[in-house]
Image 1 (cartoon, rainbow, N blue to C red):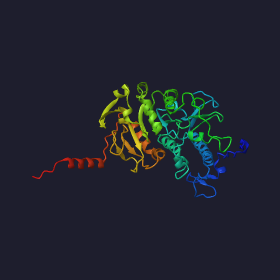
Image 2: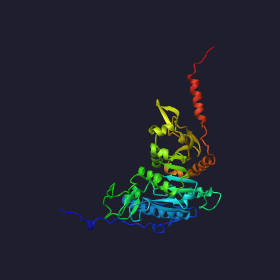
Image 3: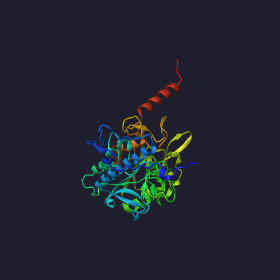
Length: 398
């Protein structure tokens, strides 16, 4: 009988997290291209072995993370670690936060997709057409800072920014850093054929931030509470799971009572949260009846309807109104007026392609203290109603 020793197993390959060493460069359009073939983008399929391909991709992602982090720091964002006051070598989750944020009158808080690294919006854009700034938080931060009357990011009238880390919630003990689920499966292994590290819900997570729900709660009740002016107003962007957990967090009576006075506007992007999940008494005190869906009377959060908007993938042009809070024949209820951001296919592309629309709307809300969403109607819906009414009306022969 024969057995294969560990020393005889194929070695787990190592790739450098450096663009040049990986054979790539950043061209004049801020796009990552192949050095040998400048017309070619990143190539994932190096071999037929998925492990090798994933390790190569993780090295590329690591290089991109470093570039994005450096650019965000140059824009005046610092990294702080959660829990607050924790050492860098202890289990922690890094987030980005503006310098001098305590003096800001307005704060933009971004809770992104739970699949992405901090500051990363879309690898499809980062590694393809569009480039690094567009596929990350860099262009969004630049646009927000450009809206201030002064060029100084330390001006009190500028908008403070907090970028939560909704994706890197796993703690790699040997490497002493937070990683995403995708990065977890690409951690160094003894051999090419070894199984991934077993995930321990206690040892491989960070206290107070063990999952997305805890992280959202920590950002609100610890980071925002301790690092911002209590009179500042909050503009919230939630994407996918981030949007869902913000909605769940605010559906708790205690949380809603604490934060409702500070909420200015909420953009819910690619969310799957249903308004039927609103159950708390405090929410009901702030709701209005807007419709009936499947014979169930739905109550919607007052401020969400008045100062909230949902954005979904759609072939319609950017800013096109898609449906009201109670949905339509093709769109399920989101509890908010629902719009297109001009992206027909991928949720991860919504914010990097449509952030100007969202930020411009936040500005519109901020300029008018008594702002409420206007009434929206789709012409085709009105035409459908007219046709339906004509069909249901009996034909009079006389």
